[in-house]
Structures are given as C-alpha cells and as structure tokens.
Amino acid sequence: MSTTALTPRPVRRRAARSPSGALGLGVATLWLSIIVLLPLAAVVAKGLDGGTGTFWTAITTKQSLAALRFTVLVSLLTAVVNSFFGTMIAWVLVRDRFRGKRIINALIDLPFALPTIVAGIVLLSLYGKGSPVGISVSYTQSAVLLAFLFVTLPFVIRAVQPVLIELDREMEQAAISLGASNLTVFRRIVLPNLVPAILSGAALAFARAIGEFGSVVLISGNIPLHTQVSSVYIFNLIESDAPISAAAVATVLMLVSLVVLLAIRGFGRWGARYERVLERDGR
Amino acid sequence: MTVRRPWRLGLRFVALGYLALLLLIPVGVVFYRTFEHGFGAVWDSVSTPAAVSAFWLTIEVTAIAVPLNTIFGIVMALALARGRFPGKGLLNAAIDLPFAISPIVIGLSLVLVYGTTGWFGQDLANAGIHVIFSVPGIVLATIFVSLPFVVREVTPVLREVGNEQEQAAATLGANGWQTFWRITLPAIRWGVAYGVVLSVARAIGEFGAVSVVSGRIAGETQTLTLLVDNRYGNFDIAGAYSAATLLALIALVTLLAMTVIRPRREENE
Image (cartoon, rainbow over all chains, first blue to last red; front, side):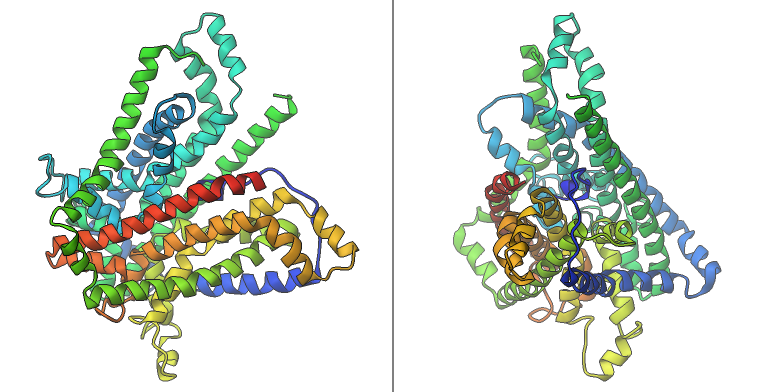
C-alpha cells in the first residue's frame, strides 16, 4: 500500500487544462492546509513558544535524549533486519513454488490492516507475561524491536516483489551456464537490481518505526531511559500537561520523519531512472 | 534462476519460519486464547454497552472521514495527474506527511489548534463547539491519518489511463461533469475502491492520534481500539482479547477485499 504510494511512477501523459480543475485544486489544497498543515505548524510554533533556549532544554533532557537515541537505533535495526528477511521472503514468494503460497502472500499485508494496538496484544499473547511457550520479552528493549519488526514487515517485501517479478532471468541463466554459483549470481546479478527497492522499503520501514506508538505502548512497559520510545515520551508529556516540551520533542521527531521522507523520494527517483535506463537499452 | 534444491528448501524454511514466528503464530494464539472459553463468553464481552457504543462510534467516525477523504482524494489526484502548476512537487510531498508523522504528534497537533489553550479552542468553546475530548476531535484525527490513501492509489491509475477518452468526450460536446461521471470515474473505479478499503482499515484501526484527542470517556468518546487498551489496562485480559479479535476479523475482511480488488486495479493500469 504505502510502498506503491510513495514510489513516483515514471509514466506521464500530456497535461490538459480545464477551468473546473483550478477550482478543485484550490479547494483540495485548502482542505489539506486546514487538516494537515495548520495543525503541524501549531506544533512547531508551540515548540518555539518559549524561545530557542526552552526548546533546546526540552529536547536535551536526559529522558528525551535517551528516548530519541533508543528510537532511532531500534528503528535502524528494524530496517536492517526486515531488509534481510524481507528480501528473502520476497524471493521465496516470487521464485519458489509451494502449496498455500497465495494465502501467505495475501497475509503479508496483515500488519498494515491490523490496528497497532491489536498488533501489541497479538505480540503480548505469545511473547508477553504468561507466554504459552515460556518466552517473555515484556518490558525489555527486545519487545520494542519485536513490535517494530511486526508493524514494518510488509514494506521491504512489497517493494522488492514487483522488481523481482520484472527481473529478466536471461542474465541469471547466462551466468549459471558460465559456471557461476547460486551465491555469486545472487550477489552479482540479482542483488544490484534490487538495491533501490530494498533501500526504499527499508526507509519506509524506518520512517514508520520512528513514529510507532500503538504496538509498543503495552509491551514495552515505557520504562524511562530504558524501553521508552520518543512517541510514548511525547504522550507522557501531553498527559502530564507539558505541551511546550511535548511540542519541542515532536518537532524533532517530525524533522527526522521529513528527512526520511525526502530520502524515500530520492530512492524512488533512483529506481525510476534505473527502470528508464533498462527500457532504453531494450531490456 | 536454477537454484539448487537444498538452497531453495533452506530459504523457504527460513523465510516461512520468520513469518510464522513473527506474524502467523501470534495471530493464531490471539484467536485461540479468545475462543478458549467458548463463543458465548466472547459474545458477552463484545456486547456490553461500552463495547456496543465503541463499535458504533468507530463506524460513525469512519462513515464521516472516509467519504470526505475520497472526494478530496479524487479531486487532488485529478489535479496532480492532469494539471500543471507551480508548487506541484511541494504539494505532492505534503500529501505524504500523514504517512510520515507519528500518530502521537498528529494528536498533539490537533490539541494545539483546537484544545482549550490552542489557537482556536477558546473561540470555538465560546461558540459552544467542543473538538478535543469529544467526537469532532476523533473525526479530525481520523481524517488526518487516512488522508493520503485515495490520492496515492488514484493518481497512478489516472496517469496510466491517459486523457484521450476525456478529450474525445469533450470534442463530442460532453461537459465537465458528464465526462467525469461517464469516462473518468469508470476508468479509475478500482483504484478508488482500493484506496477506500485502505482508508477504512486505517480509520477503524487508528489508535495513537485518537487516544490523544478523545479523552476516553466510556460510552461517549471511546472507539474500539481505545476499548482494547482500556480493558487491557484494567486487567480485563479476556475482554481485551475479544475486542482485539473483533478488530482482527475486520482486518482480515479488509485483506480479503484488497486481494479481490488488487488484480482488477492492476488490469486497469
């Protein structure tokens, strides 16, 4: 879903102008401004309400820094782990053949369709206190990683799958016939073609993890300086009626998201350009 | 590529094992634990007054947010796919903001605009309109988080189908509305349907943003996801599992709808 959503498509047609289009565009832009842009501007304004000094103090408290560092590190780890397994799962879903593949393929999107709080409950039921298999990660840092891995599972798979389907098998067959091993073929031929898709899936997973709340709030225990992520820290600040600090930390979190968003658009363009080069070469 | 059998089986085992441990077994355990005391207990738990009211509130909020976002989505997609105007790249990027921003920040942003100490909160309160800790706030949060889906699904379809048929219709004397209803909308209908399904799923499932603005008054401003959290917090684990299972079933229906619509949408492209 959002994987396809954020990847710009290269195909463009001639633009046509119509007078009703201008009105529609105006109304739609106004709607976007009222619903999205105005509230986000309020966050930045509130964060800077007490001056840059207050802003700086709010974001550099021990708890705030610890939460931000932990969130970014676990999100990075999430992106790396799911890039690895996501690529592998995509490969198995595209190239392998086994019973029930179509059902598995449909279930990949379940973390997108499942409400985040339900994702939290789902993980708690197996990996929480009173776990039927005796593994409990409740209130540990691993619990946060587990929750992030769950909610970001589909991103890399869904980014890599279409590229792998389109990939021409002739190159691989040629390499095999010249005596290359499976591993060499994957490393030298398959992987280089997948890199833009993997990176863009990983960036989406990272961006999603950075802001994640619902799935971690129950299982992490929200222990300050230990398992507390930034979104939960902001939530606590709101609950304890510290809106200026909450807005300051939220501004930093938004900046991180914006940088990732720009990176994703970059990866998307790279992938699109790559496709165009392949098309031009008649491949 | 001709991958040797042990490699293929190994990869299949590891990939499916990861999926099973992370996704399939945990979801299965929730279903099992929910129904281990029988169907009657589950029914009692999801038909309490608080649960029924949470269910209807969730439906109500979704029924307001999704149609508004669908209209916005189609208009915006038409502008992005057909129009040429300054600032298009910026607008395009702004639409993705709700995907990139934490739900908690979204909730906070609404409090800062419509809360009692927010930009418009006091004026609205004087006019008798309460947004935060009330249903309008939940609706606004839901619109915010599910805003990009229809735009993002419809724009590529519009680009793909092109505008030759629309131009032909215009040449034959159709006005803008006729062209839209008879040419454009039928061409993009599966893209719209897919976007609507994703929006509905997100609207029903939103938790973070809603939990900041709702105030969680049982029977008044408690949605289904908040009910799950509340029950878990009150050590009503069985109750939390029942409500979570209800939401998981809705998610499975969503998944089914996605699977049915996706091939048609791609045919369209």
